[in-house]
Image 1 (cartoon, rainbow, N blue to C red):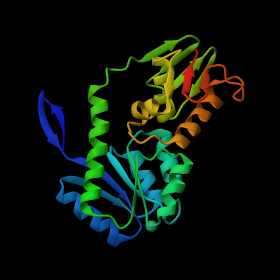
Image 2: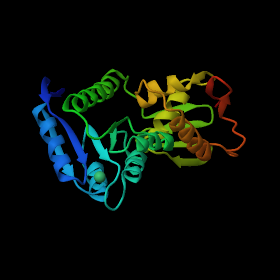
Image 3: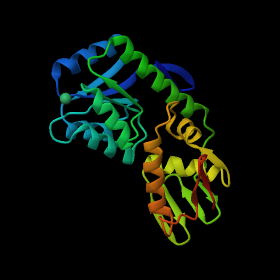
Length: 241
Ligand code: CA
């Protein structure tokens, strides 16, 4: 259970979990497990509703089924990630799907195959929430803008200004670029980026590749010949402002 400061006092608040699952029996079982472990749970049965609720509410974590009527879990994950850094656990009945999810670099925080035990579910959730909160409480307050060479990052607007252009970034793109801007001219390994930006000990190379490409498409004049986000072969990446 996390704590929050209300009128100067630290009080315990339940972590809020959103379950997006079309099989009602499974959703109800997950809900029971989580409520017994002091989580507050909301269920949505379709991808579209799940996305809408995830965007509208303040959830600590989303448990997202892959096969859903309408918009599937891949799409929901991608769309949430464009806007929010909220942790996502993707679940599927097929082991093969998990490899596919990883391959797509959607930026899910963890994966589970169904059926799963209460212990595994609860411990995964606790670990992810702890990791996220450690970051949010220990991170120094980020200034409204950060400037590095030609680049200025604007936190509130979640944009980067390069010369005359103001470029919109998704939440994760912003966090990644912010990390680079804080460490200019430094070789950063994929593992270091994953630990600090994705808050995960498990480095997902495909996710990094996808996000580096997206950032290059946005901030480089010629994305195929990057001048700012450089690949350091065999080591990682370096930001040159
Ligand atoms: Ca399903």
